[in-house]
Image (cartoon, rainbow, N blue to C red):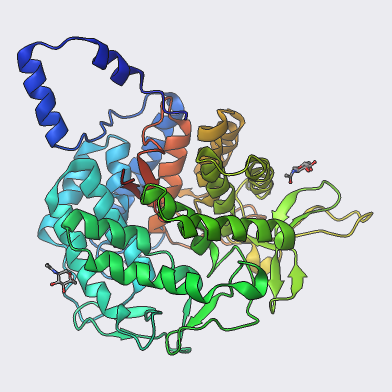
Length: 489
Ligand SMILES: *[C@@H]1O[C@H](CO)[C@@H](O)[C@H](O)[C@H]1NC(C)=O
Ligand SMILES: *[C@@H]1O[C@H](CO)[C@@H](O)[C@H](O)[C@H]1NC(C)=O
């Protein structure tokens, strides 16, 4: 346990005067909100400056809209609910940006409106909007955020009215009707299995267990039908009609599967390590990941996680998204999982670092690995269609956990180098932009600042550079959008 709460133990030894005792009773009655006093070193200050720069561009040209387009000085709409504001609330708090948080809160109070005849993604809206509002509630105690979380959460429950335990991928915020995407009747594994932390927290914070039950039923269903064809690794699509897996899809830890594995561990942690089958399924899937997907590249033996195409043929392809895995593995080891998982996590996080060894120092969306011994090819191959960079958070997230668990400062160095590449090649006059090709200078901008850049990328970098743990990993569990939610004792 790396959480040495020195101040607490000193407090306990001191005998308190009577009025201070009364004060303590009050503190017990109300939750103890973490205090964030702003950056305490130069790297944290630099990340806070980046957040201020991103925020001011957004405020100037996209205020109240979902995403900033910093080059066009415009915006894009997706859920039409000020997504960048909601996704940024807890980052603003954690970085001690109180003024910006106050203006964000005023917007939530006066402008945020979910009563729109518009279909949104159950998954994306849950992790970003429900998750963002809930973490703002937990970090401040302000019930405004809980009310808004319940407003959107209850609208989203329409997605659960499908013919099977597998919910529809999309839901109308006004009519609460669910529907499948235009391309078919399937939902993605990661999407239906990565909404449980949020709905459970919503249930417990509002004292209405229907939210938890509705979402957890999906996890129970997947556990019951099992992923036996691949020893605990699951296919990536489930039918909303009969609730079954589509067979022979890709077996991957990347897009459409990733956070299923993450939420097995994190749900187990969130519920106080009491639901054994979540842990068993997690352990089983990690054992199979090691056996079926974990390989080393040539010539430098970089450890990576590949995919099984059609459930059979190994492909040495790894999404940047897979870089969540070393972080999750390290968090598991922190909570008693086998030490071997930490060795794998270290190796994988180093591979994620290698993904940033490009001309710009930014990582591409997808890499392939060279597996043929004796060739002159490099270990990491970036194909032209995979070379873009959305300033994703997963490597920073991994280095944050690895640093927290091992104390090794190398992870801070890697984070600092990547942050400098962002400053050099993704910073524009009015914010930050995704880039088209990490192997090309001068860079071409995609003209998009994703909300996860503020919600996760900058947050995890700031937390990585912190002198003291700002969010304790035995008190909070981060959802898959980087929003901390409390662990229930
Ligand atoms: C609990 O939430 C559900 C879904 O929003 C709602 O239908 C129900 O009325 C709520 N129950 C209570 C007691 O508020
Ligand atoms: C980690 O990488 C090193 C160097 O390639 C290798 O020797 C070791 O076996 C790897 N460990 C695991 C658990 O993959």
